Image (cartoon, rainbow, N blue to C red; front, side, top):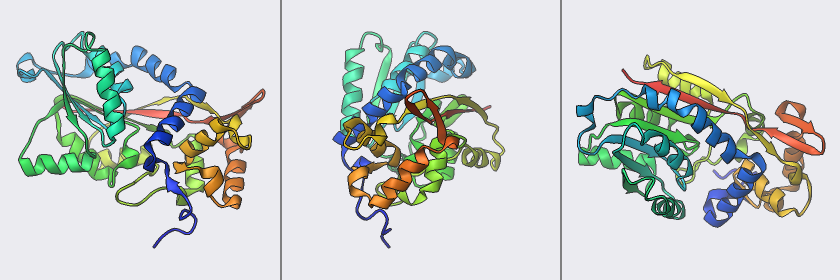
Length: 304
């Protein structure tokens, strides 16, 4: 049965062009790229590269096996591959990304950085992870990976517990799994919990908030230890409170996962949402800026 609250709204992911604009606005007003690049530069080798335990003979002719789940347009993958290549000059990088526009953008990035990525062979899979997993089962494909990453992509899988179990099974002994998600202690988590009805639950267009505790439980019940490293991030949402501001509209779309939220959502819902965004537990006011807490967690699992 359709949710009467959301029937007037469409998922942001339905419109790839607008999603890309909203993502660009989010990156600009959060400084996300700089924050993540600093993390890759200062933390990635210690937590990932140095922890991968691979015997030379285990790399086979393809080299290090890497799997990206929901790799988007590839910027994060690029930063991680750059860190891995000095130690592993041959890498086979399997990319799972359902969006045609995103995977084409990733291909363009790989081509433009061909010299830097000369040791990387790409295996492009334009599909959802669930479809990839099913295809592998049907084909009897049992490729295992030395490094698997899912960067802000578990929000779009139908069953997080089963997906994490399947990813762990695809890890080589001595492999590393990296999951990055928004922290459940963040302000945006409080917002998602308060407006839970905004989450997309349709099979073809899932968007839901995934908690670190949910991921911990999935591994705990399998007897698999995981480590969590919290990281700070703030989003300047000041323009969300300016009627008609294009960037503010795009930021609202991004945090609600709804297209044209300000205009297509019921007026009372928009008012309540904006009011809740400003509550002190969700962020802070810094001078003329209203900042929303978007802290995230890096979750690491080591096999063997």
